[in-house]
Amino acid sequence: MEQLISDESFMREALKEAQKAFDADEVPVGAIVVCKNQIIARAHNLTERLNDVTAHAEMQAITAAANYLSGKYLNECTMYITLEPCVMCAGAIAWAQLGKLVYGAPDTKRGFNLLNEKRILHPKTEVSSGVLAVECGDLIKTFFQKKR
Amino acid sequence: MEQLISDESFMREALKEAQKAFDADEVPVGAIVVCKNQIIARAHNLTERLNDVTAHAEMQAITAAANYLSGKYLNECTMYITLEPCVMCAGAIAWAQLGKLVYGAPDTKRGFNLLNEKRILHPKTEVSSGVLAVECGDLIKTFFQKKR
Image 1 (cartoon, chains in turn cyan, orange):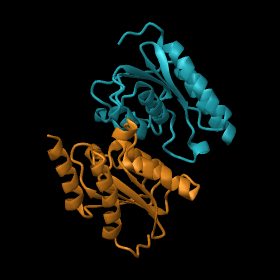
Image 2 (cartoon, one colour; image 1 turned 135 degrees about the vertical axis):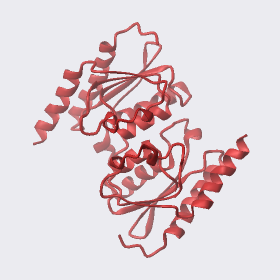
Image 3 (cartoon, helix red, strand yellow; image 1 turned 180 degrees about the vertical axis):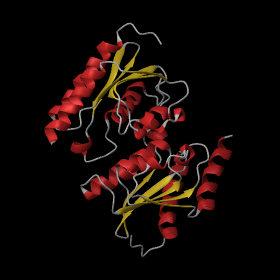
Image 4 (tube, chains in turn orange, brown; image 1 turned 90 degrees about the horizontal axis):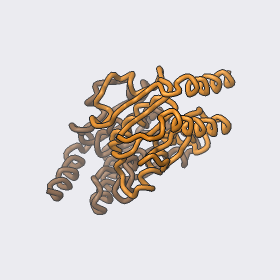
């Protein structure tokens, strides 16, 4: 997949979304969807505000990107997420047949990789991790430290 | 969990939802959420109409039930689904901490049980399967036969 703009600069946009979640007292996770080097969707976690466990950043980003493209498959898109997706979001990413998934920090409690099941994602989805992992992870750590 | 009305009669309500999906040319899966023997949410698969892979019956039912209850946890609810949930929906059901899950037909291609990972669902979620399995499964078989 062609990638003129760096993964880091796109991840910084996802981090801006995560910061919006942080400022709204939501678990700070942000996601963006990129198609042909253009951002076509931005989202951050809204589970508290919407009172809805399904309102993760990734779920909203998938819905918004599909809406933008008028098509439900995202095989020509890259999604940047500040945190490793959970099982629900990985399942949604699989249905969307996402072209490439790039995430920042690992989620050692709820991340889909805990299942050790490569079958969750679509076989054609490329995966890259660790992009701005420290910044992405620090935002979450700070959030939970503040909560204690 | 108290259950005055039978699982079968609630599953018939979920089947009515699945039939609505069938009639709209959607993969026919229906779900209802029951709390204190009352149906508080009804939904059917809308992935085609909404152009959105996340619009499974279960996802919509979780959102609707949480909205009805003004709380995002469904630990006092039972969800009836005509088909075994996929990984995405099982992940959402886990986040919702659903009290009890009752499903009809098994999904041998996409069902969450294929992963052989009991960790997907919340440890407190009871699971019951096979309720009206033949009717639930036949509706899906008929749908895909019609498509060929």
